[in-house]
Amino acid sequence: MPPAPGAETAAMTATLRVLRPAPHVLAFYDGRVPGKRLWSEASNWLDDGAYALGIATYAIVKDAHALIYDTHISLDHARLIRRTVEAQGARHLTVVLSHWHDDHVAGNAVFADCEIISCRLTADILAGKRAAMAAANPPIDPLVLPSRTFEGELALEVGGLPVLLRQADIHSRDGVVALLPDGLLLAGDTLEDPITYVDEPERLAIHLAGLAEMARWPITRILPNHGAEGMIASGGYGVELIEATRRYVEKLLASRDDPALARMDLRSFMAEEFAAGTLGYFEPYETVHRGNVDEVAARGWGEVE
Image 1: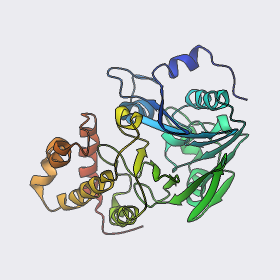
Image 2: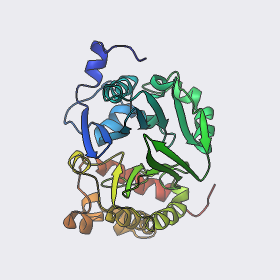
Image 3: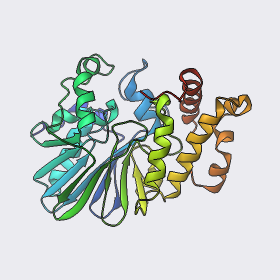
């Protein structure tokens, strides 16, 4: 069992909001709090990435079972998640990791006594990054690795509710999304509002193919790990988020050969989608956008590792 909350736990999770975007689904949303930092004033992945942009992880809770989709940005966040689902009667907990990035696995140790599922590639990447994550700021130490892996698809049940895990090579080559029977998609970082964070610029053409495939799935609503709190609380995004993401990636690729496009700020770059309300403008993503443009320009995208 995770330890009882103390002063540190209360401070780290003081701004966390528990949302109920769909039946049997909880969202644990933190960040997008002006002027607030959780870890330190110095540059770090938690404050300057996940917290500044806003992050949600999810739990599917039904009867005595819970599926935890990502373990959040700290052990304290993970402890709060565990206490919350157990307070709702969950006694059989399973963790699913959407991909290997720090802000999705930092709380794994709180669930060390539970089954932790990922695709095989996520497990391999995490095993190779243990030392780097232990030395990160803030450190993830210990990093508890997945205890079960799969490739392609994996069908699960949460209290009798079918959940289909499916690999999706979007944003990160090891992405895993979760599909619920009513068409609700837990999207991890494969989709993000307002724009994706480019971590693999050399593989953007592959990510475009992944988005095209996703657009054919029977999706009705989308819950991403990074997005606007209000949209997540109200049930998530429509399928048009997939097309908006595809358009953004295509324009990023085009910006390599179009200096005027490369110079645009985010508001101008995706002006049509912001005007239509498909995406919600959030100023901190200007830095993300500029980094994306620079990454594509510097590293290219034609050569796939």
